[in-house]
Length: 366
Image 1: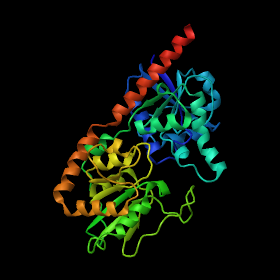
Image 2: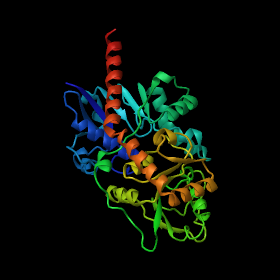
Image 3: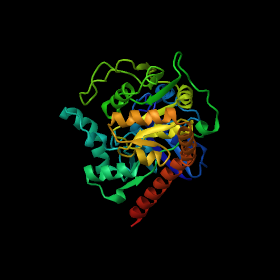
Image 4: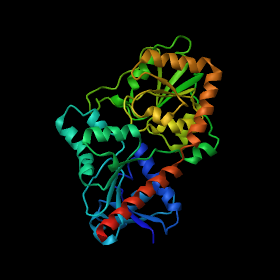
């Protein structure tokens, strides 16, 4: 038999962000692999697994895996446990491999020491106890080495991927009544995502571009400050904002497909998955040059200096007015996305498990 991997699934039912997509995509690809190579079992914190498992399994669109409670791990005979949610949420014995997507809470710790310690704790535990750590980019690897003092060989880089559905299907483009075009922003509205830069840039667009353009946000606005104490900024006068909340995958693909530009102004990312997804759906991508973002977008995006609203406004205006540039970005983006499928992410991740488990068995026989 191949590897039997226990997957820490504590957040699988609730996480609709990039990390949740990452976990579901890898599990879906592994489910298509030969069971003589790999099979996965979900490990959840609730004791009544026969009842609670429905909440987890309904988020999956492939043959459902087995579900077990944490206390049964010692009896399950797992070859390894995978912790995909930014560190170790608990500490069983055995081979443990953790995915740490970025070093954000070390690079940008919240001002409240208690919150900072809480957010950093699972990553610090992974640094102490995990047999190996997987991260999304070479930038994130350097950050984890810097903040946690980890040696290079303890960390493997596996880039995220794109769902082939995004590339294979023609997506009906979205539109907004009374506007000729829209700029799309996707993500949580926290300070690091750079929504303030985008709104300021939108206010600097010349008329009539500004009045004829919608800034569409696939995410929620909040009246409360984020963990770093930054309030969500308000749009400048004359900027039309459409806040859509969290949207379905089909709606998101439609939004990507219809966008005159997808803007990713983030100040800090472990990878930048929406950049690839927008490219896969044919949107011209404008992104900041911060952190790992150029590692995700390669040469297929139009970059601007992070935090520079004037430069972002100029880039948006260029894409709106230069049809040839927009077409080049679309074509380059499709090629970039096609070269980075989730199949590759799942395969490379499994190869790490196979290597680490083989090394652990070799050591146990000495």
